[in-house]
Image: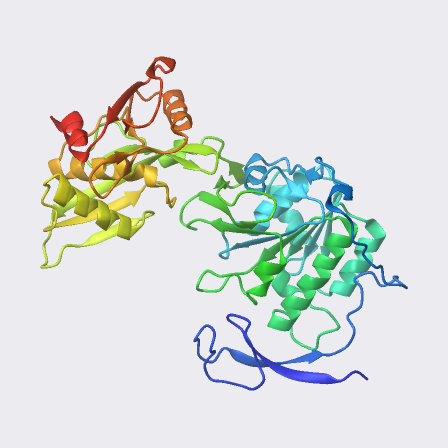
Length: 452
């Protein structure tokens, strides 16, 4: 009988201790450290029939075989964009999100549309429940096999029999291995089952897609090392009270982490939103003050977003500064620039800022739209709906140039905007565009062009 060892793990961050403590020294949470029994024995291979261990050989980098077509298209353009072209063979993908946001629906939809043999392993739902959801998605795939199992050894036995091209696990917190004497969902079980799945994925070049639960803080449940072990970490964001969902890459070893995918939740599943500007710009009949359209970029995708601002006299002694979807510190900086460089007295007024559509933007190129919306609300004069903005604001009140301005102009042109305001220092040939390009140098020029 192998020796057993008792250790203590923090259920919040995964830190390991030799004895019990009331407070975790890593994440400073109270009463999160629990005792777990781990079995110290040689880890067996995921493949039970393996008799001898395979020894890896060191190769020169130019001798390593490489196939550019080593990616599997998911037949889902939004997911392909976030992943950087598709699923890489032998990769491990972790999808996290709040309960009810649509994680299982998204991966079941992918499993039903892939032209490959897919094994969908569920530890949370029965086969009849998954069949019911598949009927609602109105998509059937004879290559999609459903397995309800939580023991990894039994899962690998089924995998050896059917040899799938893609494996989906829903969810990693429900799995357990016989080699660890701990309950499913514990730190030890999550770490060990993930390690077994990674070993399987790398040895067989089979992509594995995992669903992960999240904690109340918004982090993926389990040890932080889980996110280090996998190749791709995706976050499925959105408000359960709204229909739109955003798929964002937190980590991606095979592509950019700046890309996003946008979906709309319908009764038949998740619809891909090919033109995000349709949900990020409000539909209204009359011009309203306090709104401005910004041309931004998420990865390589140009987006037109609506910036909404409300400026009102402060009722209480201290003016309020509130921002949704935009950095509050940058908002305070822009208000200081307007006060110091342009002479607008906003220090005694409440300022509220919102990015429409529930999206969060970090692109400094929307600075010009932010101050335009603030000035519009302050003066109570509406900005025409066919005007848009793309420029960064400096501390001296100068309008700074931005990168890839041509893409932003083409997107605005395609969506029917008549004027776009950019920095004078951006080298753009106006004759190549039908949209009128207004070049400005200072914050004061914004006010004179819009409201005088």
